[in-house]
Amino acid sequence: MHIRKNEHKDPLLSTAAVAKWLGISPRTICLWAECGEIPAIKIGRQWRFREEDLRRWLDTAQAKLLGGRSNRRSAVA
Image (tube, rainbow, N blue to C red; front, side, top):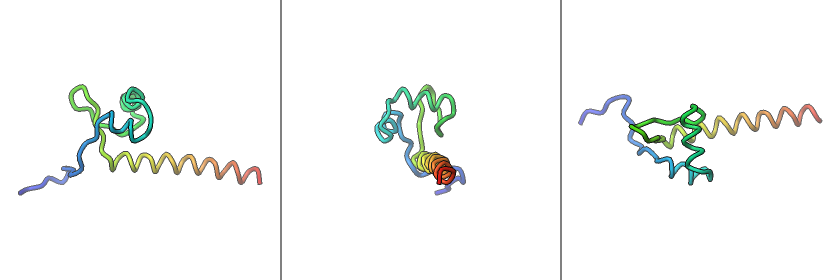
């Protein structure tokens, strides 16, 4: 069996699954995908998401938030 370099083995997640995982509405997930706020793939009229990409996106967002908080704390101290 020949596997292409760009082929991913992980399944694509639906908008509903991502919304449930993040605890926000599916509509918000679609809006974020449409404006490029969250990593997404559009297949036909539906958005799909790779778990690996979402975890990386969450880690980056968390690092930005923690970095901003630690800067404020050090300025106050």
